[in-house]
Length: 151
Image (cartoon, rainbow, N blue to C red; front, side, top):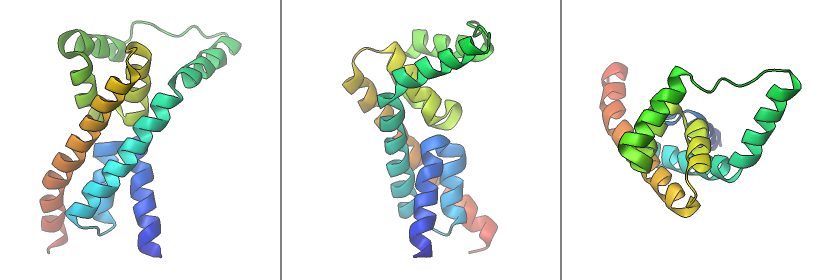
């Protein structure tokens, strides 16, 4: 039963910060490389679905919250410029590629959902990015984790 809750924890962490938190936590919980790939992929896909589905309402709520407090959101930040540069140079492919390791699944899914009109295409590329980073992250972190653990 404890392993079930650990798997749920890894999936939950993967919905929020996929590659940098979800993958290492899977190995820290003692899962095999294949299990880490599976749990982080499931968590990442759930995160992409959830945050893309609720992107417009989340963005509206955030802007309402800022307006209520009298805060105007900054439009030109370093992060926004970075995202615009990635979108202009690489398009949806680039955003889907950098979302799991760098931006985080919620922020990346909301950005992609608000920028691109074709939601099915955007969802497909975001899921492909999550799957890619689940496999790559598990293959890179797995041997390092085993080396550190001394197995």
